[in-house]
Amino acid sequence: MKVRRFNQQGIDAFRQRLSDLRQNPAADPPLDLLENERLTQPVSPELQIQAVHFETKGEAAHYLSLALNNLKAEEVATDSGLWTWLSLLFLDSVSPPTDGRRIIRNDYFYVFEPRNPRHFYRHLLFVSWQILRLAPRCHALFMGTRISSLDAITAEVMQRLYLTRIRCIFEVLERLYWDPVNRRPRRGITGSRVSPGNLRHRLPLRISQLEKNYDLVDLNADQLITLLGEEFAFKSPGSSF
Amino acid sequence: MIKRVNSTGRRRIPQQHVQIEVCDGDPRSFDASINLAGFAAPDDALLVMEATCAGSSRVARFEWGTVASPTPPPDRLLHGLAGQHVLFTLKIIDASDPFRKLLGVAENIRPLKGGKKTATGRQGILPVELSDDLEDEPWRVEYRTSEVFLLINSKLPFLRDQLRSDPLVYALIYPQVVRQVLKQAFADQADEDSPEAWQTRWMSFASQLHPDQLAPPDEDDGEEQMQWIDAVVSQFCRQHEFLQRLTRRSGETTWEDLS
Image (tube, rainbow over all chains, first blue to last red; front, top):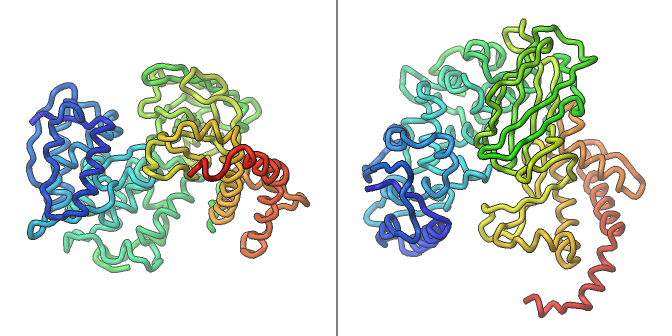
């Protein structure tokens, strides 16, 4: 199938169909919209894509990164119609049916709103693609998580531009918060308890403070970890917060 | 309430020392004239310009040579920054410090000149923008790093004009906006040494508006803060004669006409 993008009418129609699916969770997905000439148009240059199934953000990110490789990344990153169309194409991945019924959650998980600072990072396919784009390596904390939901680590990091613009931040995150022995994030890093070095509560504050006094963008991971200070000098990668 | 602290002696560069012109195009481009006379810094300190834009999550970064030899990069295109309100930051970075300590910063600089696509010059404390992202909400206050925006649903473009002209719109919306923004300014206090921060400018505006021109109360006294906000909002309504204007306007239009 050719890759297409929704126009505004198409996005509105998709929102309406999402609403219908909430009312009737057993209904078929509105795949008739995918190639509707009035609601969509092919991207240029022409690209082909298949409705494969993804389990994780990593699978989606790698597939979409290749599939969209011939488009300008800067334009893809703000293309509301494209990402919204992709959500429909991969609806079985981002909202998988269980026993024939699917749960459609808030629109922003499926309808991409690049200019909305509270919503843009919640789009499940976009955020997966964007993480891989920003972090071609050191993305273990993110890539193994399910594509059908927005996990806390992804949300805490990707909503903050002042974090993601620091070039070494993904290496720092992986060195601080990934447990390589058990191959999983360290326990408690996004918990509600404000513990020293916690990713959810302490890291953003500490970076925000450092940003006031240092140009963090080009630091390497060793330098940034040094600046973060004793609070982030964890004794053991496997330890909890 | 957390304030970020200037713990390394970073100095503020007055905004008027950086003059910026944004040129229309797709994407737009910009040029900057930087005057560092009187700013004591090593010759090899690095200059970096950053550009952001309301409605975009992108920060464009441009290396601009050194203090002794400011050198604009050949590519000064503002990719991914399509909104009308573009803001620039100039950083002066200590080249001898491996941690890239900031020696000076000029933040939230607005272009002095621009084409039709760019807002220029001084701007009020509450820019109004049309937004495609409000779904069924008519308006919303949005707090961004450097600015507070009143977003108007783009499905209601006439509302932007009515905000200037129709008491039934502005007298019902603006008092609530002022109250909301001041509460947020107490909850999310500006960094030290940030006269351009939206919180600082709003607090200054409100202090002058306060009937007794009282400064904002201490950050820990919630009750006193609320009373201070009440007084400011009340004076704001009085100064703009909202009640009288609403009364006159309601004589022209019945509420039933609106339903």
